[in-house]
View: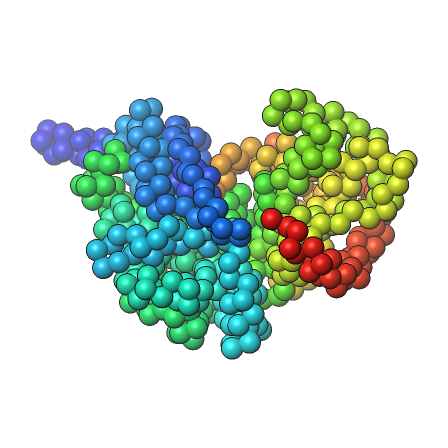
Length: 524
């Protein structure tokens, strides 16, 4: 080989080897994180910036669109103080789901973004369920009627903010907004758009029937791409604002829940990921479309397939609430209180001496889809200790999760173990209770920032490091650092308790509605 050709080849190899990192953006409800990963899924550097949340009216939750973008800028700028942007091969986004914004013809926001927490559309849920049929909505979109999907808020905005709605040229979820900011193109991932409740899941496209009900036109929505596909390149303007290299590939990612599943290698046979966070979210992967009230069906962060997802609105949130409100202990000031309570709860027997709790402190999504549902403590007596109460909290969430996972297991694919992530996964007692209750192994992964990692895996596919996202997931996901296995005696006892638990809510749900109606005016 001539010297000139050898030198050119060497420069070319050096150029491509320089792009040795991908970025997973996690644009969540409270912050934006920009995390750089290598080809093995190792975190090389990260930046973070907070996002303010406003509550202008009871049940309304909003954020300024500009804050989404400002926090993205700050997080990336922090990251590039640690690493060079020249090393970035591609970037992909994990986003807070069911959060969206509206824009005029000049792409300026018309109002603050409306968050997934927002509950203003109760009447629209009832209205559209009557107009289209609740079962039909569920079958098309994969989601039973509920205030969370954007569909119902679209109808609310069209009725209550008609001037804004008439001016609207575009509407998009957080992923689509960030992609447009980086690339000047209105493109998004179908795995970010589908939680909006506007997608025909079988056809992998916007549903004309649902769009009509939402008072939307196709021209107002982003173009849809599968996760792992390139949706654009970083513009010179975005490069100046973020620190990214102009021309960096922007790749379709997905909603934070589906990204977390990919980050936990949900593609492994028999696996369901279980995120023990503020809320508890679990999901398993399947190629065949299926729906059931026990779960909601989402597009997977993959080239094909679906995630069958369950959700408990209150996870570690309920633990902290219980400790602070009932036990009157400040979790932030008394760092070891949870460890102490675990020791006390470990001494309490299965069933916490006849104490049972239903964890609907913030309503219920799967499996009953009842936003008016409220928590329940049953069987409380003078002989119960705080250790018993703490154990009942852990058991309640394990029982609820098992009830839902069993439904997914029976209808879709066999689930024999959980890959557990999130802050709650650090609790040995909780992991063992989940294993004993469910009869499934619980594998604690060393994965950190599972949602950002899942997005990075999509970016790795877009950068052509791997031919499929599942390959990236297998190579980059964390490995089990401890496995909790079900104990036969304890599982048998918990099976009895599960039957009692499964019967409890159906017997008290109508009573709960009467109580809520009675106290409605006194609740602020």
